[in-house]
Length: 307
Ligand SMILES: [Zn+2]
Image (cartoon, rainbow, N blue to C red):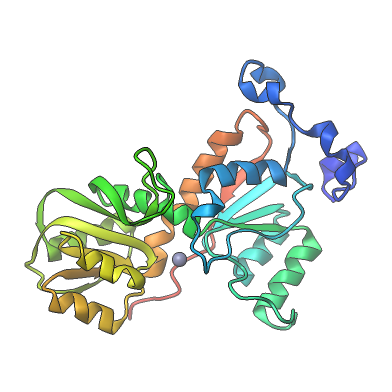
């Protein structure tokens, strides 16, 4: 139980209190901003997250949304991270965080047992014990127009963006889909582009395949593991594919097609999501609950190091 609720005499799991503190529709209009500040429920934050990244845009194999938690609980403190790993969850619990928003899901596969001496079971136990909710924005956030793929493309200076594989829900106004294709402001050699990408993403190293002198004007990219989109890339005019976690034979296929690859690693293709979500949520909730603390988890780093 959190102190504010304790002062109000609330138990956090009392759903019958919800109507009392739910924001009436007229307060959402912005006309009475001075009256709007009030504590938020997890359900209020989920509403905004699902507006940012509709779950219907997620891939069929994915598991986005609330992983652990009660939508009727009050939220005072939010962390955003890439992975709901044991160190991140332990630190969030120590810091009395109420909601951890991650990019990667906690559960990818149906859970058959919760063994608390194993990493996943220990995370579940700790989160439940401390009342930490975990919510995931994954392939829905990758795919949505203005989401993670667009952010990566903008970070890399690409223009005239379109999805690499368009979503069925895409329209003229909303260019949803996996990956992006765009153009550079001017033609660059593949090797120079790789150096620039490394710098823009703050990576220690990136891997390059193909002729380093290949002239690049059109770029395809995919956040995370882009292997499943190699065929889509080869069907475009793009000379290079930027992604992470590419496999040997996928890279060979690209090399045989006389194109290039820049593998930036999974972590560096996605970690920019953390600050982006923090900024979006701070903007969304600044007026509604100025006391709500929203922070990036500062613990995460690429699991790979270069020796
Ligand atoms: Zn990923």
